[in-house]
Image 1 (cartoon, rainbow, N blue to C red):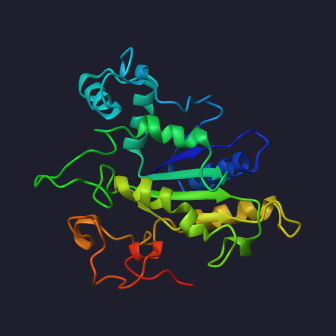
Image 2 (image 1 turned 180 degrees about the vertical axis):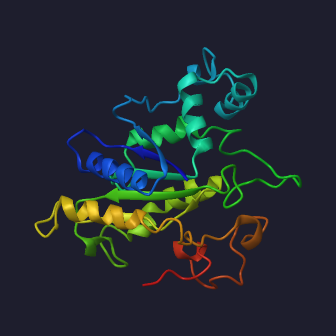
Length: 257
């Protein structure tokens, strides 16, 4: 298996950087090939610019320029290089601190620039159906989120003040990974790192190692497929999760509580 680790570590002294190195070593120890993209080390520019597509300015929708650039071979060389990293990966691991209930801007900007129309989305099957939510461009790949956050574990539970951690990560696991066909595995959220009861760095490293030890045998998060479980208006069919509106309705089975 070839893994691609994408890290939004804010500095070389950060917990995220340490866990990125831990994850890389653990995967290599399992004899997997590993590519690591440490976005801050790379000084990644998070902003989509016309030069990404070999043009001087945007005069049409950005997605149209992206499709043209892919067809004409004018996409920015660095963006194209990172797209090739994605293409050859079997597993994509996102490692980041949870900032303002989401990923840091540098990682969001990586997706904005690399997951372009015509590459990651905007594709159709032979019948003309949009290929997304399970049948996307990257069907067959797996994804994993590893994140850290400061507040106590209870604050991220079903009734926690910050919101359920699964719901906070839903825009990433469902809206980015599953949307493009990547089957997301259950996320690892290391919580409470800014509290007096945090066990410390060795415990965090052990959690990462244990989480990566079962990748070959586990089933992904059982998200529903668009063409099978949703109607033509992309509403969940009435026979599923009747009367409910929480995010867990998009799972084929209820989330264990």
